[in-house]
Length: 433
Image: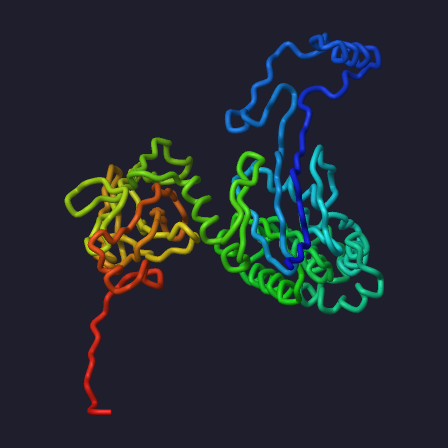
């Protein structure tokens, strides 16, 4: 029988918009009396409230539905990824689980001690030293004095601030502050750990240590809820993922398929042709104007054939003469934002790093057949000048398909691996058996 660490049923969180009080008891009583009689509020502001279109479906009268009718079960020992656009309801969901705020409706059941990493460093006192803040923050997070003392050396080593541990944290850099805060929370021993976008801070080495620590916690049989916009990290850590949109849970299941759905929604589907009309950013030399995928016959593609080449074209504008400029493309799978192909226009011709005059340019590169496996992909293009990013843009998703049936003739639905490249085999008969 499946054991659940977290069980959520019909969870809803509402917020009432507008003025909560008017500053005087008389006006508050007038407004309350009008509401009780079903009349308009006599003290309401004259200006109508304008709600952004993206959230208009969640606003009903004076009530905003931050979360609506969410039902979700998380198994014991599972690492569940949670993804979605900003404002989708992810943080509200975690705050309800953490009892920071109470639900309007629904029920939450949890088994075991809960620790949260929603606001890393909450409770740190700037005038206290790192050592003192380790004990203070550990107590806030529910660790006993003896537990903190026993793990103190591990915490300091994890944060990599040994020589500064007796320095007031007000003198720490932001990276040192966050490393110490995460180190304290990471050495809790809860049955359920909630982590909200803490990997957005810290250098690459520290992020790697954080991911390793979370993997260790999971191997110990503990349950983790991991919220992040870092899709490769979600894919690496989580077997299952939940997708939130507009305050609702819209997908829950295999991480690859849920991430693919999220990427398709964010980038769109259709012909892989995207135009960008914005002006170049201030102080930058240019702007990507258009990215498109074309079949060999020049047709704009929403899908290409596995056994045929296709072209990627990047149109860009330079508003001033530049040197050391490269234009590159990356081909990403829809499941994870990890590039399968990464190439630039200067790799085979270093002369292109010389001066380029202002004007409009079109860069075309041909992708040979069988480089990409069947599946869905999107193009990301970048302009970089002397290691400085000038512009980055992405095109909608396109598909690579096998209408000829080469792959299925071999007995596969889809070849294993990111690519479908073919290499020559040499087979020699060595004799009879």
